[in-house]
Image 1 (spheres, rainbow, N blue to C red):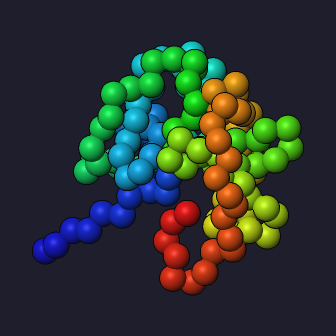
Image 2 (spheres, one colour):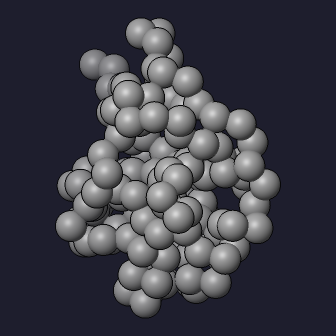
Length: 133
């Protein structure tokens, strides 16, 4: 038998046997403390159960004094962006937002580090053959 694994979407929070991981660029990042997790605006309620054991781990996030990793949805004064390649990519409408299967409860407040990242355009409505933003 052959087993295939599909990585969760960028920005997903996965609870893998009690450890919360943020998925970014096909990798998993843990959190060194609840303070770092909560300080970045994430919610334990948004973590979905799953297996990430097949994914490569990056060093854990140990501070909230950083911009959010790729895939994180941020709200900067009412404008929703997705962090992508150390930039903020705008989401121009709720139609576009929902076309990607995104949920408002995943959006976290932007911090000063996010606001210093350049804006890099906007995403478009998801087409049938597109798997990720």
